[in-house]
Amino acid sequence: MPILALDTSTLVSSVAIASPEKLIAELILQTKLTHSEVLMPHIEQILAMTKIKKTDLTGIAVSIGPGSFTGLRIGLAAAKGMAYALKLPIVGVSTLAALAYHYPMPNIYIAPLLDAQKGNVYMALYRWENGILQEVQAPVVKSFDMVLQDGQVLDLPVVFVGDTAQKQALAIAEAGGNVVPAMPQLVMPRAANVAMLGLSEFAKGKTDHVMQLEPVYIRRSEAEVLWERRNGKSEE
Amino acid sequence: MEDKACLTLAIESSCDETSAAVLSGGRIILSNVISTQIPVHQKFGGVVPEIASRKHIANIMPVIDEALRQAQVSLTDINQIGVTYGPGLVGALLVGVSAAKALAFSLDIPLIGVNHLEGHIFANFLAHPELKPPFVALVVSGGHTSLVHVKDYNTFYLIGQTRDDAAGEAFDKVARVMGLPYPGGPQIDKLAKLGNADAIAFPQALSGKGNFEFSFSGLKSAVLNYLHNAEQKGEIVNKADVAASFQKAVIAVLIDKALQAVEKAGLTKLVLAGGVAANSALEKQLKASTEAAGVEFYYPNMILCTDNAAMIGCRAYYQSLMGDFANLYLNAIPNLKLTDKE
Ligand SMILES: [Zn+2]
Image (tube, rainbow over all chains, first blue to last red; front, side, top):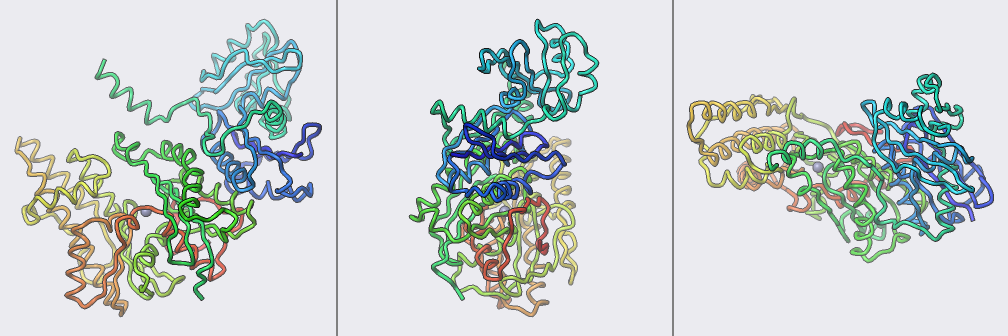
């Protein structure tokens, strides 16, 4: 019972096919290709390579953010279109939680950092306890500098992952304290993680509604923030 | 040639309407569902691209589902999918394009990438079953003002277009300065009915014979200056007169150039298309002017003037007859031109 998994939350384009017992195939490209152009061809190609028919799929897992707004919407529109047409269950998984699947080991924190523009990151803090992923700190928007400072004084080693961790690899390597840099092949999102997280959600009976699933933006649009700043103040 | 059994599902998400439609053959609308976001954008005085994209991804599947339900067909009955890939807001277009590609791939059916502006022209084929090319189309919308020679269903020549602002853009900006709510076009249209169109002489740019280019930025500035000067002098402006005089200047240029273009092309048919086609004064005066000139005049009804997927489905159908299909690499092209062919 293979599922299809997608992650287009960063500039990495990744698709995977997995069943509960194994990762069957995964495609990860970090080549600045446009998601809108290559995502569907990648899905078509990975199915062809594995000789799995799209009608043999049993579900779709999709990374729903936070991350690049446009990237998330491309992945979600594709996932919803396929789920609707093939009558497949769909589940949206947190991009941050999926990133924590890179380091499933005890006695460390994993801190996924995704670019939130202007020196900020979307971040959360996770740790693995008895093989179960625990959210230590819920997703927030913070400045990267603040995140780095906080990391240095944590009570356990913390591994930074995500696109900002890749971009700031040097600052992270030099930070010292309890900050540990990630390995280059285990720093960016990959669809295999989304697949495994999605499979565990499906196993718990959790699915999302194909009509209602939306990205997790965390942030409102800039226009809304500005409007409320301008119009909210006059009422105070 | 017309294959009435062919069912086309069409998707449109280029600006602030999420729409899906089902067509039987090229011209029979089985459903045309439009989810408008106008109330959401109103308080910002215009379309906010990021908010539009967020609404599209939330609305896209329910709108498609409703279009199939209203057409009383199941997804597996659909033979092909048409989708707007430009021009428009890139983030908004990408939602429709991505969903359309996923559906076409999943169902193993052909995909057709449609130019939104061509869709507006083709809205007339839905409104008028007897209409056939060749004709001249006057495309007037928030983003475009163009004269197009439609030779046949798949051959278009651009006769002329705007150098700067689109007519609809000028309407929206003038309306905004006058404190009218978004979208401004219909508001000006309404207000103009109460005013004197000869009260103020606003300039009509590029009105020379044989010039098929438009320019509305000078007119827009003239109106803004007029309002500004009056404000500085503490004069009370008759807004209805301003609206009527401004509208008259826009319409005069549009009609003059459109009729010249019809004559130059040696044709006898003029087709009005695009969001501004809903302007009642433009319709009325074009009707009178074309009648006087012995030119047949066609325009779509209200619903088919606005952004809607049925017009995209109509265009897609005629593209499919030519084998003009897209592959899974189809991307959104925000500044797609009328004559661009991928
Ligand atoms: Zn339009």
